[in-house]
Image (cartoon, rainbow, N blue to C red):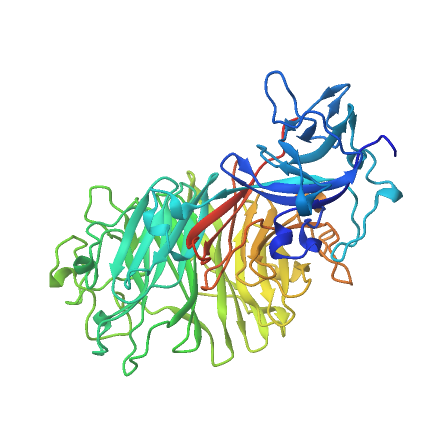
Length: 609
């Protein structure tokens, strides 16, 4: 021990906004932030740490501090991995080494002293190398770092309205995150969409917009939903109020203020309006809407659910859209452009002021004006399906679709799933016919949990994944159902429960591995994903992420995102996973002074050597 280097302590930026106990993930990794090519600087203490070469790698000089794929950065006598810049600390950091974590991927930290590598990563399973932890059931002295690449979309010239934006939703188009969001900073509402390279204005109006929801079909085309909170003057007419509006596939034409207020626009449909006769305080009527797409551009099946706070009810809609007027039954165009997008008119009618289907042109005349002085909706007379009602209905719903019939690569039939909270129970029900009008008897997934931020994903093998916050216990819970129509075979586990976690939760799945993003302690977000059984849930082996003392077991990896986030609006922490890279992404709206707007972080892959 007089000559062998050994790392005794590491301090990352997480220790500056939480205590040092939270610096390591559930499996023991240290999450750190990378901005561009510059990684955060961590402080390292230990015995016999005396690197000779301290600069980053050059053609002639190789740093003696390495980040590498393998636990020991040696291949024979050849040092491996990425060389890191290191300098001796001074003042309050005297005796510490300041290491800049500028690396292209995750890896183990090794110090070389006179050619000898630090002992930590050599025999970390030995009893003398175990470390104590407040939040881990067991922990060793490995020094692996998890690199999170930070992107401030709010400073990107391709997305100017993401600066100051709120209520973002995110979906992954292969490895690229896409966002729907609203911007109210000028005192009026803007609904925007960013496709990974450019920003599209979807809608503009007075009053402030709130919730969004974003889904992509298998061809990468969107359903971008916005809660248009706008009332002209309380005149009691449906045309005076906004509601839930969804943009399908393509950019709408003519989105200026005076053009969008009362009129239908290409590729947009109105689903539920704020208006209710005799009620003028209708802003904020719909809470936490959810939308999902199943299918491709030819035909996509749309599943939508939301809580209606005026009528105290959970409502659901199903309809089809697409570019094929053959596959989309009762097809009527929602665009006047040459590239047509059709909707099944019988499932979701759009009604202009004169009671007929709107022109869907950019002209501002009555043939294109939204429904006026009858009915409860701001553009449709098709009533939604109604599920739970009453004052005990929860704010949070989630929906998804399961493909059941395909023909020549097109999904010709899909069945809906709906989860909601009512009374004291969280219920699960599924459609039993292709029209999605008949439903199974709801079963209880959980009781006395005040289920919040419910999220559902159906994976490519048709397994159902559900995540939610147990709002009473403040825990993150996960439900796995192998077959959507037999929920009795489910298994429920607790992912994270130390203190209060799980607020603003979302779920994504790649392969069969679930990833969950949610609020942690203080100004932090967390990402958790299943790692046991190669990340594949199974009823027989699926386990909790915590033990009876609420300490992490490592069966789920839970990492704090290495960035301070002031989440003072009601947006969610959106999680996604690259379809090719398999790297998790978390996107959100930061309200921190000087950092207001949309940001996201992407976890890097492990280093190749």
